[in-house]
Length: 310
Image (spheres, rainbow, N blue to C red):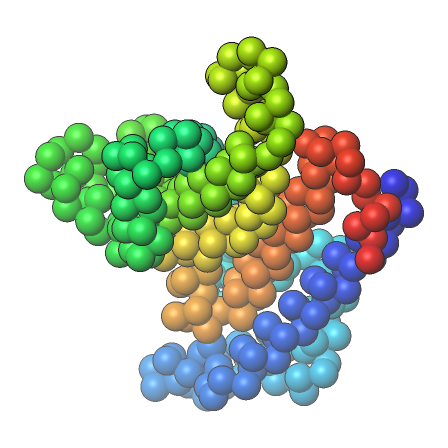
């Protein structure tokens, strides 16, 4: 166990270094610089001072080395477009809103996706099965950035149940959470349905039913626990999709989360903000994947971490 965790920790560090390096290179390959839009209204001396202040006048290897040195002390650097706020401050301010939306979306997707998948599997080729499969197809076909304006139109404008946008009470979290959760919910429904159908056709399930054990008990004790493994496997891509979807959804709903800073950073070519938010989200994703691997052993004792080291 300890050896496995140590190896995974080293892999996490290597992965983050590759992500930082690639993101740094891609940002600087794009023509222009963060102060290009201000070159017409600022004197050349001021622009030169700004370049020097943020080390943009240095060669790229030097800039890269300075950033890595600061990163070792968990300093993500200052925002190039804000004189008073650092990237650490922005992430600290926006994390609460982003975490709220992400956790709510995950809970909605998991709870309803597993429930709908079980109902569809137990009613195979009947109307509940067709209903939930149809909803799953719609959910997979419509991405979160299209679902968001649809929810606003129907549940905030035509039927004013929820606020259109901004941030405040829990009511403001409902529509963006639903927009983020809809597509993952649909995928989990399909995964759970297929897995549940396969599990319910196994011999040990038939044996349990032949012994007179109630169907509900068989489903809860034996069916769900074995059928849920593919859903656990999907949690990594699920979190990745929620992360990338949050960027746009937060912008649509004017949520003061980290995604807003990331999108604004791209438009403003704010290098430290882009790098900092990328590192932050990547760390969450990599850590979550490790937790999912460990969760395998809790759900199915037959799976050992030592067998997954390769």
